[in-house]
Length: 125
Image (cartoon, rainbow, N blue to C red; front, side):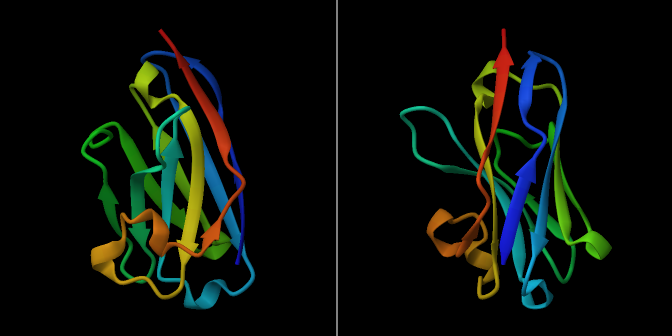
C-alpha cells in the first residue's frame, strides 16, 4: 500500500485546513486508515482514524469537535478536516494504513505498517 498525503500549510489560529491521503496498491483488504502527528521533540501521536469497512471514526481527545476524518471509498482517499486550529496543532501530519489491525489498537502508532511521507501543518498565534 502506498500513501500520498497532501494539504498541509501555514494558517492562523482559528483557521482551517484539509489534509488528504490517497492510498494505492492492495487497498481492497485495508482495515483502517488514520492520521498521526509529530511535533518537534515529541513522539508521534494519534489524531484520528477510520475503520474502513464500517466507516466508524475515532479521535484523540485533543481534537474532538474540531477535526473530522472522512473518506471517499471510490478514490481510496481519507481526509482530515481541521477547524479551529490552535498553535499546539503545529506538527508534521502523517497518514497511515494497515491491513491486519484490530480495532482495539486503532490508535497505536506501532500497529500501522504503511505510512505516507508527512505534511507540515503550522498554526501561527
